[in-house]
Length: 494
Image 1 (spheres, rainbow, N blue to C red):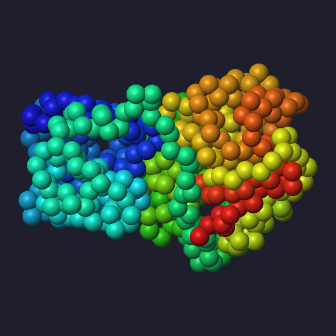
Image 2: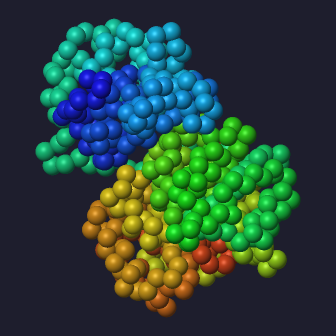
Image 3: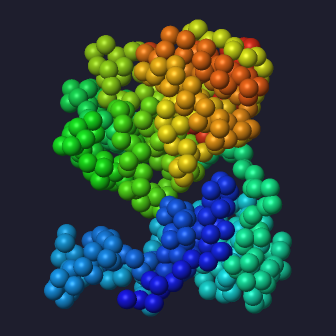
């Protein structure tokens, strides 16, 4: 076994975990191959390993990666030279060998993280090895501050706001921990994927419940009528044999989403229907590869709330909380014209639907608020508390809706969010529909959130009701409860 397998994380690694949990860590770019950041508790989606990792092997033919443990088991079983199980070619450790080029998609992800950060910590590096050292130039050129933690001088010391010569295990904990706890960063606007144009390719995938074939066909026909080319996930019509409420296995649902997202021809991924199961695919996705693939648009609601949170957390992307394309409201003969047209305009002409406020809209608590739109389906938001993807609403305007929930369960879910601090620093709340919930659902939610003391608007037509308007997440907006409007400061898509 390689000696690195016996290495243990130190207090420096654990301090970065604290920074991530406080919502202040964009990415860890490392030249190390020992996996210590992940073993300390850092999310794999946050760690960009530019020299690869000891813990995987990679096929030299098809580039398929598998855990090294699986291959060692094959050796111990008597197989002297395990070949790739897919193409039969030679495999090697998934590290960058002498003379081997760095992976372009990994370097792109590292450069994007450097461009997006407000502060770069250069830790335990001489900053003399390129192209890694050049990431400092990228960050500083984009306006980030630089803090260097290294025992010896570096060529970039003069550009740093601070230089610490202390051991990393001592310096990093002092930098990221505060006596009274670390405050969270308020929500910021996320990167908006581009709008669609006729001729674009979109993918329809099933990340949650099983589909009705006729409705899937109706969805494809509708999207094609808009001038789009449609790809359907390979396992879209599968049904998991044990968990029959899932459209295929977790691995297959994740694989369809991953394949669509990383396909350079796909401009948007539209989730076919809700149900349950989206959260189960999150840990199976290769977030660094998805980040390297560039901005792709995600559309869906309900169970897709889990994916919206993950796309915001791991990829920094805005997304659309909008109707599922393979459901009756969109894909049947009795489709709702308002729902369908609002989705189409949001995708192709987003500047025409920047004001959301029709129907029986009313102020629960008056006033105006400005902030970044966040939230989604209440039960999914409460269920994600404690998970990496849960994004507290500080500085945001929260969208809330749900389906089929009795009053006591709405109260329980809101209490979970309130007690966890998720609502701390929220600026406003916009309620959508409460289909098949308790008759007094809106009053229950309003009473439970009265302590927030922020403007609250009810009756906006988004969520499980009809019509179901499309609302972006990760985009700045102004909520005017007295006027009954929610106005986007910029179009939902670039």
